[in-house]
Structure formats: structure tokens, C-alpha cells
Image (cartoon, rainbow, N blue to C red; front, side, top):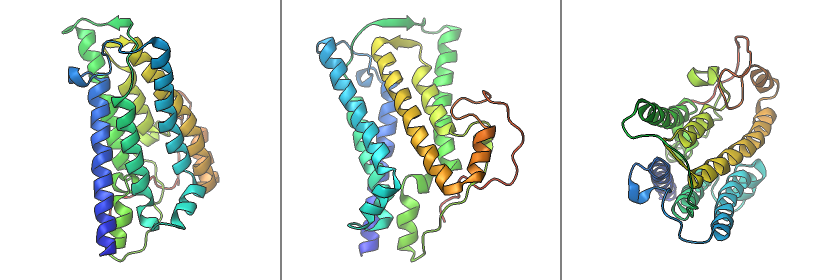
Length: 258
């Protein structure tokens, strides 16, 4: 019964997190105007900036702290280890929804591309391509492990959790973190760049850069020289910005749910 509850918990956490990502995409892309972040300002500029800084800080700190090994070990002392990732996913989903929903618009217009123009469709094409890269990359590193489902599923099947291997495939042949690249492309490729959107994009970009540096330290500690070799040959976030040789014998970036 306990294992069924853990697996159910991971499913609920997954659904909440996935819904928050879709809400984020719809909001930053103004796909549903009523949900878009580019609304009229409701509060003073100072309060809006302070509010937005607090929101992004909460989101960033949660990700950085809960992703560290020491926190995972501490969590496992009080709760079942198989739900650790799902708890991270649940907290991330709730804070992402909070970030987008409570983001305060500040007005201002940097550019507005005419609807129906070639550039309008090019930018929206890049927007959707970015989010597609994000989702595809999540499957390349095992979507189910990334979102905590594999851990509780293996527990439910009475199978031990096996650490995922590391291999270089598809997007990972050109950039070390294509998932983040897709996220940034989706954030910056917009035909309607308001000051509100710009601040949001800068905040997310700053978080991604800082978070990636922390993540790289963990990967170096886990995979040692293998990751160091990969790191020396592939750019961190922007494809084709570092000369590289063909890599051989590198470990896997993750397997699918077993």
C-alpha cells in the first residue's frame, strides 16, 4: 500500500509540474491573451520589480537547494528516498505556477512585430522550436526519471533503483544543456517584447546560468574526467559556439523508464 501511495504521489507531482510548464509556455507566448504576462501594470514599478525579484528568488533557491546531494541525503533521513525527486518536481511545479501567475507587469514596449508578417511567423516558429527542444531533451535524458516517476515505479515493482548511465545523443552532441537552451530560446523568441517580458527573460536566463554552473559541479563530481572531456568539447548553452572534436566512449545521458 505504501508503494502504491508513493507512485500515486509521483503521478500527482508530475501532473502538477507538467501543467505548470504548459501554463508558463501559454503565458510567455501570449497564446491565451487572458493568461499572458504582457498585461497592463497594476502596481507601482518599484513594487512590481521587488515582487518579481522575490518570485524568481524563491524559484531559484528552491531549485538550487533541493538539487544538491546534501539536501537529498537529508531528505532521505526523514522520508522515503524514492519520492525525493517527485517532491522536488512538485515544489518546482507549484513555485513555477506561482512565479508566472503572480508576475507583475511593468509596461513598456521594446518591439512589436506586425501580425502575419514573415518575421512574426519566424519568431513564433523559434518559440515553439525552443519548447519542443526542451521536451525532446527531457526524453533524451529520461523524461520519467527527470520527473520522478521512474524512481517510484521501480519501487512499486520491487526493483532497486539503478543509476542512469550517460551517453551523448542528438542535441547533446552539440550543446551540454539543450534542455536549458530550448527554454531560453522559447523565452527570447517573441514577436511582442515588452519590458515585462524582457525582465522575465533576463531573470530566467540569470537563473539558468547560475543553476547550470551548480549542476556542472555535480556532474563533474559524479562522472569525473569523462564529463570534463565532454565539457571541454561542447558549449554549455549555445550550440556551435565552441570548436569540438568527435567524442568517443562518453557515458550516457539517461535511459528510459524500465
